[in-house]
Every structure is written in structure tokens, then in C-alpha cells.
Length: 394
Image 1 (spheres, rainbow, N blue to C red):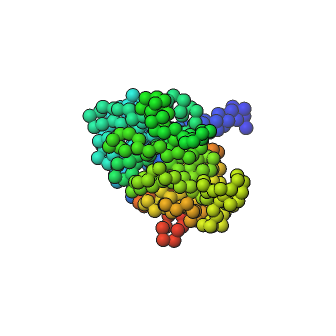
Image 2: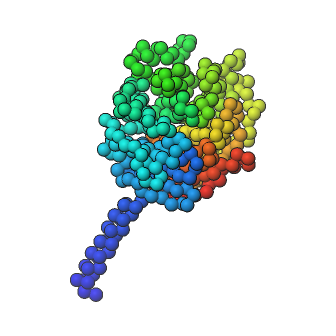
Image 3: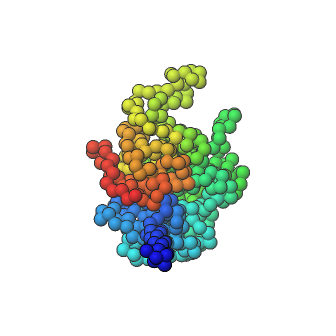
């Protein structure tokens, strides 16, 4: 073969390789940063690290790229609607139906770091990089519910997680736990937080909000460091857990009464125990089930999986999930989500805990992967208490 032909073949090979690389980059996607599942469990919407926005048909096992210029934290399905929210890199927020119809669009003055919209599409709530919370009305006016603190996201490398109940009366926000003080009552009160800065600037810990009154009604203390919390669909329960392994729950009718979740190996810690630190009698293990290998109590996320009755707790650096029955401290069952592909739960990726999403009505769980743009989808059976992986895209 002549040198000319060899050079031609080499050049052709390089061109083909480059073309394939461009094609692959165009059609593949980066890891999921935020995800949401439609109420009926038929669709999921995901925003990816490379700014792609993808609509997944979970029934027909198909996907469609909606945008290549999406805010990575803006994938959200509106409750009881076949409509999802997303924001472009131009800061325009769009409410778009699964059939492609744009139902509402408006521009913000900043990128969102988490948001939701009421079912009538009239009122929009969002957070920013400083864990501020804002309310945008139908007429376009915006008010601040919680002031921005520029250190928040940069300090903790996670979002201020927001959740709303189905009646759209209550909201929960959660960023981090508050360090326990040296003297009773240990934690700052809501008024103390307000006294430190206008409009609850330093309200980082789990908080219960009255949406109509547009203010927090309870500060739910007890967590440490990076904290995730969520509100049950019926608005009756708040559950929280953190990277230190502390799990808590409250009934929203009695927010001053804190309950501890059981650890998987020791049981429930008794706050009022008379015994010295380290004494095994400080723990109630009466309701423990046999622990599976690979369980970690330090938590990256929680999500309701069957209406307001059951929720899942996801351990950091673990492919195991614990099932809890609402109102009880005891784990009911442990689920192996699969070692391969590695899920977003690996790598202490607290800035991506929004890549875990459920439809409590349909019992669907959708999760991103650690380092690729794929998705793993699971179906929960409340009668058999099983969680089956039904679709994987690597």
C-alpha cells in the first residue's frame, strides 16, 4: 500500500472517530442533576450536567431530548398535571405538557436552584443559590419569603430542598442541621433566626411553612450537617435525615414533638434515658429487623413511595434503601437497588440528591446514576412490599 493511501485511510479513520464522538456527545447525556416523576408514574423529566433536558416515557421505554440548554436544577413535574417545569439558560421558566404544548412561560432575574408551581399554574415558588425562597404571583410580581445568604450553597454544596403537600397549604424547606448549643434550649427559635437577619435569612434547618400566610410556622430541630427532608402528600408528616445518620419525624399537628427514627443496627436512641453515654440501655431495639449488608444510616435523600403511608430512606455510598411506615420509627424492609450501574447515591453527591424522585401515587422510583446520564426505574408493590427494577438505561 502506498504512503498516500495509508495517509488517506488514517485521515478517514480520524474523521470517522471524530464524527462518532460528536454524534455520541449530541445524543448521549451527562449525569442527572435533578429529576421528577409525573403523578401517574407514566413520565419522568430529568435535567443533566451537560444542560440537556430529557422526557422519559416510562411505559413505552422511550426518551426525548426537550432542550440542550436547560438549568440543571429545574426538572419538576407539577402535581396532578401532565405538565413539567424547567428553566432555560436564558432564565425563562416554561410550564410544558408532555405532548409539547407550552402552557406558561416567564423570565426570572436569576437561575433557579429548585422550584415548584401550584396546580392551577398561577403561583410559582423557587429558591436561589443562596437558599432564598421567593413567590411569584400570576401578575408577575415577586416577594421574598426567605432572604438569600450567599454562603449557603457554596458552603454546603447542596440545594435547599423544597416540598409541598397535595393541598398546597404547607411547604417544607431543608438545607442543613443546626449545631447544638452548649446551654438549653440548645437550638435557636424562629424569632432568634429572624432577629439575626431579615426574612429568615439564616433559617437553614428543617422548617414547616404555611403557604397561605407565607411564613414558617415551626423550626424542626435535631439534624446535623447536610440535611434532606420531605413532606408527606397529605401534609400530616415531615421526615428528615442527614449525613450524620440522624433520622427524625414530626406530625405537622404537633411540630414541637420530635420523634427519632431507628438506626439499622442499634435501634431508637432514648433522649430521656437516665443512663450514662455509651450504656446500651440508652437504645430501644425492640422493633429492629435483621439488617442487610451495605446499609448506611448517613443519608442522602428520603422520598415517599406509596401515598403518605410508606417512604424510602437512601443511604449515602450505598445501593440499599430502607422502607419506613409513616409515623413509626422502625424500618419495615430493606431493598437492594442493584450494584450496577452505580447510582447517584455513590460519591457523597449531596448536590445531586434531587436526582432521586418518586410518584407516591403510582409507586414509581426513578434515580440517576453516579457518572453516566442513564436512569434506573423501580416499581413499588404496597401489598407484597417489593421494589422491582423495571427499566435501566445506562
